[in-house]
Amino acid sequence: MRIDKLLANMGYGSRKEVKTLLKKGIVLQNDTVIKNSSTHVDPEKDTIKVFGEVVEYKEYVYLMMNKPPGYVSATEDNHDNTVIDLLEAEDSIFQPFPVGRLDKDTEGLLLITNDGKLAHQLLSPKKNIGKTYFAHIQGRVTEDDITQFKEGVTLDDGYVTKPAQLNILTRGEISEIEVTITEGKFHQIKRMFEAVGKKVVYLKRLSMGTLQLDSDLLVGEYRELTDSEYSYLTSIHNG
Image (cartoon, rainbow, N blue to C red):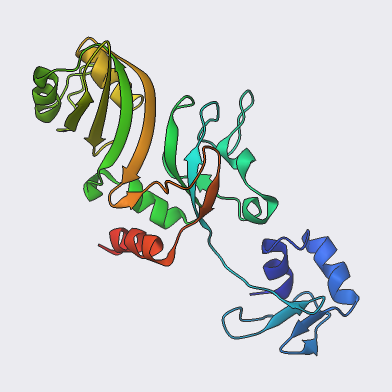
């Protein structure tokens, strides 16, 4: 990899700005000054320093966010703030994107990465990854609803959903439930409850497969995945 590309990817400026850094003689490759922007380096073997500090190079970023309501799951939008707007500059320089989408008013677990291959695998219907949500439902959720969700619900466009697991936590005018689905149709959970005569008034994603939303993450906060969390995602990718 060219040194100017590596440093630009790590947020040291544009290619032009990186060339200026190189000309000043403050970039070292294995303690040797390099000034030529086209010099090739191996980030896995070479030690690169700028201003005396080691550059910790990484190609991909993997982030877990507790998505807040009011933000759209996109990289840019002409009208609303996006989840990418919540990232620090040191993370946004990787040009990451949300894996799948949560509705604007939905909270909870959202993965953000720039690893396109991994994202594709996580979203593949063939992987059959269960996604679990907590919700407040306007209306009394019943055993009949559990049965219908298990058999598949016919949505407003005639599509019959794959079987979903519905658990009732509390019953009342506003019921609390958890539901697990293995697909991600547009507004799917809201439309499933509308199909049985009820309305979702609050929705939060709790997990994807065995990847759980970190309970210490406040709404709007995010962090890098741990090694074990990353290993789980790559096991899906390679499985």
